Image (cartoon, rainbow, N blue to C red; front, side, top):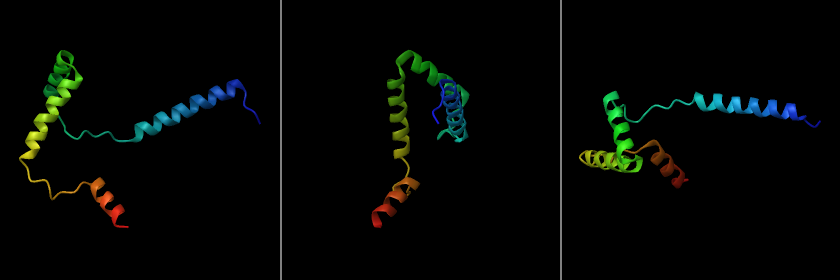
Length: 88
């Protein structure tokens, strides 16, 4: 059975709705829970200096701060999965 143009449009609309619902099911929890004042200042800085520069600066500061911590012995879930895949 060949779909009519109206049926094709209805199907496309329904498919878009299903994809939208699926995308909204995923929980987007931030890695860092910045305070609203920090978020506002990041937005201001990005407006003034550009996204790329501010992102680089924040990454530099956070990278430096994390270098003070002993983290070499901690494996992330992705790293553990990669290690398990390599052992098979």
